Length: 76
Image (spheres, rainbow, N blue to C red):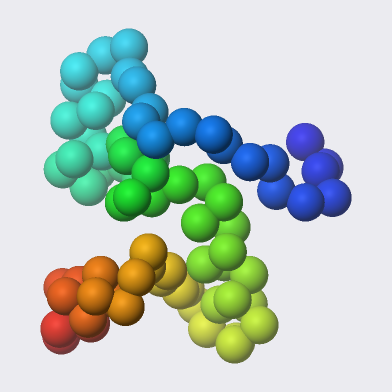
């Protein structure tokens, strides 16, 4: 929408009209939003901006340090 800054999504839960679409998200076949603690539009925008600043392909943001150190991504 060509906004100067990303919009704020004041929600914690995202709904789906078809259970098959939600199943695709849970299975990782499509990337979409389910619950704000896992992923959220402004968080995704933040991850992309930090990755761009750092010259990385992608980034990942966490809600806390504990969430980061217990993440399967960082355990690898």
